[in-house]
Each structure stands twice: as structure tokens, then as C-alpha cells.
Image (cartoon, rainbow, N blue to C red):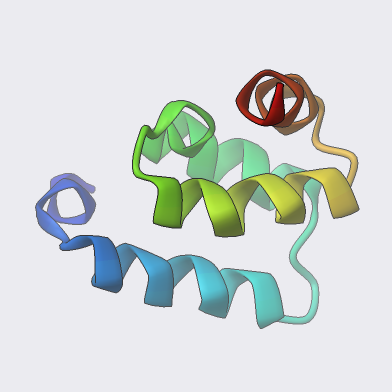
Length: 72
């Protein structure tokens, strides 16, 4: 789990892009990933650019609030 935090921004983007394109990704998976890696609160704009739209698409509530704040 700690390995994720040593990833570069580009490596995190690959992780999130893969997660986004994986069939079967759902709110339960986003909840677990967010609990492990706190993606909703990641300040890296590259991560936010992938995480928040995925959260909106899947109606993941924490991402909805974060997206509203980030865009606003």
C-alpha cells in the first residue's frame, strides 16, 4: 500500500486510467481505493483529473463534493 505514495504523478495517472477503463469498477472499489490512497483529497491535478470524473460517473458521493469544490 505504501508503494502508491512513492509513485510519480505519471505512474498514478496510469493506475487511475487503468482503474477507469476496467470493466466492473464500481462504488465499492472506489471506496476501498479511496480509503487506502485518499485519492479524493489528492492535490495532484493529474490524479484529480482522472479520479473525480470517474467518481462523478459512478456517483461516488465523496468525489461529487470534491469535484464541486475543485471546479468552483
